[in-house]
Amino acid sequence: MARQQRHGEKLTCSGWQLGALVALRMLIGWHFLYEGLAKLLNPYWSSSGYLLEAKGFLSGFFTSIVANPTALRVVDWLNIYGLIAIGLGLIVGCLTRPAAIAGAVLLLLYYLCNPPFVGFKYSAPTEGSYLIVNKNLIELCALVVLALFPTGRILGLDRLLFGPPRIVDPQHA
Image 1 (cartoon, rainbow, N blue to C red):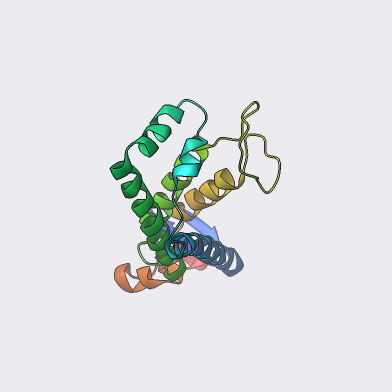
Image 2: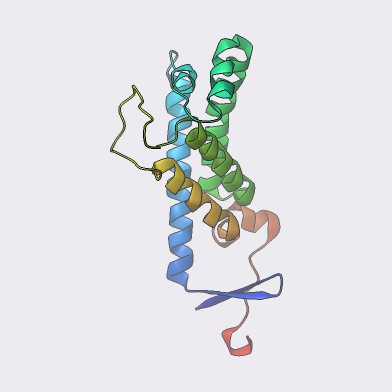
């Protein structure tokens, strides 16, 4: 059983628990990377369709982006390269915490643009019928958990950049 100490608190996690967090990080990273590459390789992709479907209190903001071609190009570019950078960061465990936080913010924007609330109908088909909780919200929460654990320092380039996490001997904890 591994123990970690952070800011005076003792965190106890088994190797399996830490391994599961690293696997979760890499899987979410793959999802982000794939989504970014799919958009990059599709010359017809644009966020305009998603933004035009916006509902809720920020719908005016999201639809105003589509009305401004320069803003739409910036949003498309940020979306594509943000997904790729976040995905790579999570997969290789480099700057893991900023990547997880950036991914959570991006997913929050997706969630706020098309929230799965009662009475909101969208023209694009979804994978299922959601009520408040959808895959964006679930993945967002998973990224918040990953931002709180130093998984990049356990297995990732963060270990080379910042060193391994401090391990406390359970005999002396």
